[in-house]
Length: 364
Image (cartoon, rainbow, N blue to C red; front, side):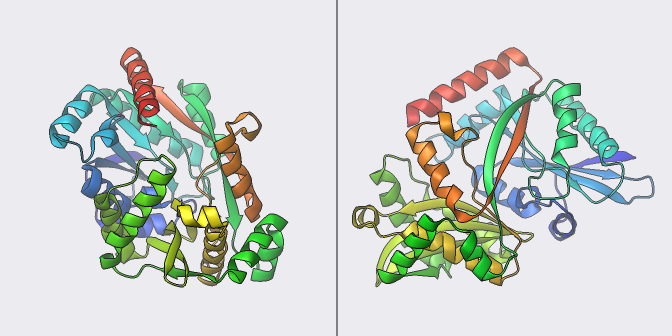
């Protein structure tokens, strides 16, 4: 068994292997790497575990970046600031991997791969592996593989959670699985004349971006940039990996929701609702959730990931508790999992962690 490391890969070959594996994730694709490079200027590192015969056993894509890198994008002197930050605090981000293409000896394969990742980090001066977690969908047996993070190598766990809606039952059963409050809101949205449409062309992004900015500013949040949305669209939409859905009444845009789409899994992002919709209690967010569930079901998708909730809602702030309650009403299974971090330069990693937390609090 050997582990090979690449700075770039053949996009079609790599992504076809990820698509054909249980537990494959959009975050492990080279298309996702292209988006990170195009918008954020981030480099990916690709690991491939092979038998001596050359048969591929597992794949893993990691992102090399500073914890502060994303805070500096589209700021004055962006290139200079990100270059300095990446030199001072190089970090490895690990999302939803590895992807296994073998059925047996996965623990052995994982141990070999993890050893090579750690060797790479030590030799290249990485300060921290941040937020490593296995696939939360299928195939990676996270409960066993997590033992390698926690017990044997000194990784520090952090609980995370989401809701996963199974889209495979027939539509009537999907409807019955909703909580009564969700069904009531959906009926009300139809009675109020709301409908869903999907963005079709890049030329529509400018107007949609203005709407998103208005929505986020109205609730005190920092809006995304047009460059962000455009890079997402250009890298992912042509491959069917991104959609943006909008809720309208007549010609009035009331809400929006993005979907990442890969391997039969939908992952939502960028939910927004207009101030007008909130004031008039027009349930645009409920309409979009339900219509996207129906859309995914009709396309033969398996799962709808509601993209994160607090692991312990009973002790959460009111805002996060409200988000949990909203996402809990769509018939999904609550999925608790752990993300693991490991410092290679502990003092510097601690300073980075505290500094990043302070900056995030100041930006709110």
